[in-house]
Length: 399
Image 1: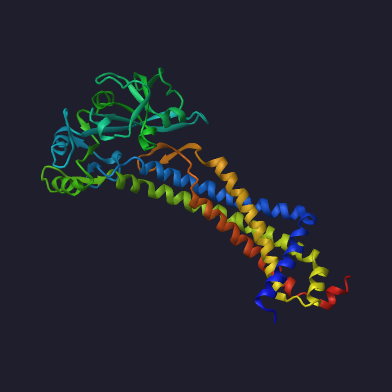
Image 2: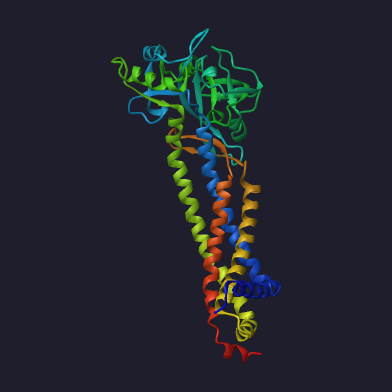
């Protein structure tokens, strides 16, 4: 029985012969490598969409911010408050104050139809009416072009994501909503959050345009500190004048991201699994070809005293080497292709489009490499066993 050192020496020798024979099998080797690269590229690409979507939603909230909805509502679309309700909320303890009053913004949320720049198809785009405190409640928001809209006028500012994704939202153009025209006077960024997918205007003006009276759908607030949230929540949920649901903004957006992220992730793994099955067969074909081409070589080495274990390990080493090359190629291509790619999809909680960027993270790249290794292990296992079981006498007769 070969000792560890001797076995290692045998593995190195047999593996060397196998790797040197790769140019003779360039066609099948290339097919296996690119098959595995395709699996990794698609898996990482699809999953990066889910990560980017979730990242955009989570970037929308901060620990010291909260949102108040009507009790039982899971989104702003099905929530509603009268003006007197929003005033009670704004007077609750724990809200940060400015020279102009509490940092609370009662807001209105409507959906308008605009064509996508990429396809020309209509999409639901969110238009939000805000109060003056909104700019301080969302401290990540800042103008990148133009100016802030004037309060009391039919003017709007547009998030950078919406401006890039939807036609008719260029700075200086006019947006027609219903019978009114709204000049676009500014473009804003919001730290990568969902507000970048929205169009903003004065809540009072939007109420008049949509005949909403003096109603709102949500109240966004900035708290004194993250620790003030529980006291703020308790004060509102125990107030007999209100029937409300109070959430940290981060919790609210995390809930919204769950369904879409789960759907995208499931779809990504399903597609990758189907492709991986094909890649496994490609790897099997490649490694069976390798064993077949080296039949006489393996038999000769076995006759010289090389153990079957060395043959198994050498075939597996070759299979894993090809899998790692394919995985690396797929990881690089997916990063170059998808990372930072901007797109939009439906947020099913608000029934409106949300723009976001694909995010290829180190964790996704690692997952892709792990998938490549698994394909290599499965694809190399059976050919390795076949190579180790080759009858020495029959194989030598081929010489």
